[in-house]
Image (cartoon, rainbow, N blue to C red; front, side, top):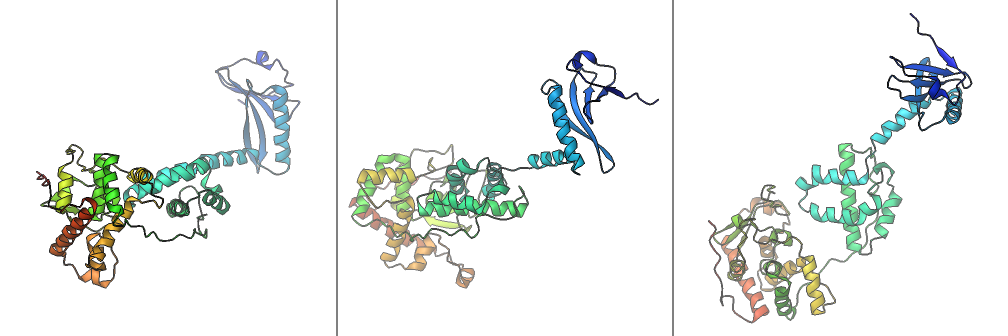
Length: 404
């Protein structure tokens, strides 16, 4: 049986005129073609604009009658029917817009996915890059769709960062996110807006502590706390990377050697070495003394319960009135300069600091130079300690406690 078509010149009293029935039904408005009142069994009423497009019936939901009155529903339907007369498909366009909106990926979402799905596992320095993104990029771009970020946006972002080195590092971190998104086909990004953006010119840092500065800084290390101060002293005495020193673990210390695995270990939070190579460092007598004097933190596994040492170094520079700032990495550079200054040579310096220069020689020369490296570490540490304290390295050395 054909269902009767209900048509009516709808009045403002339509809510009283039409009651819910067992099945939903439509009431067509005779005053505005294409407009229909939908009445559901639950009592819910809404406006529909119904038209044909390419031989198919299309239903465009205008909205609830509680929010849109009869007069406005007629006006909106009139606009929709005009679009139809011009060959458009309002309902199809509405669905496409909704689809695009649901697929929009903001830069904040992309940056989060980059860290969780890629950087945390693949990039050992991801924390520094993530810090730069959170500080300089997310406040500007966090809610922006990645496909709307242009090269002009990148230029404006970089111009707003005063420190040239920080600007370059932020540009590199941002570019890495876009490159990953394009590779993984995330967010609809087709081009990396960071490409072809010129970097700021910077000078390579050459800052090392002078012989007169060594005792001043050594004494000031004690003013930033036992843990942070000892970590800074170890960087100066061993020449190892600050990020590796702050992640030093007790189980990696064996018979006086600090045996660093090249690969990360998420379970223990060991980040791995920067170049991915295993690296053994002899812990000289002064270093063993410093570690032995620390409070035992074996419950965490870390020798040092500290992550960032930059703030401590800034405080020390301010305390000493040093205008040319010193960073934790400059302590590593001071150690390296001391190695060559004592006549051990650049190859030896690269070897004990795990600075990989590459080349065919490094592929075939697998001799570990353990005895030579031990001599270098003891000699350099003793020299730096004499500058720092005026005492011999063997004075008041506290033996390194055995690792069970």
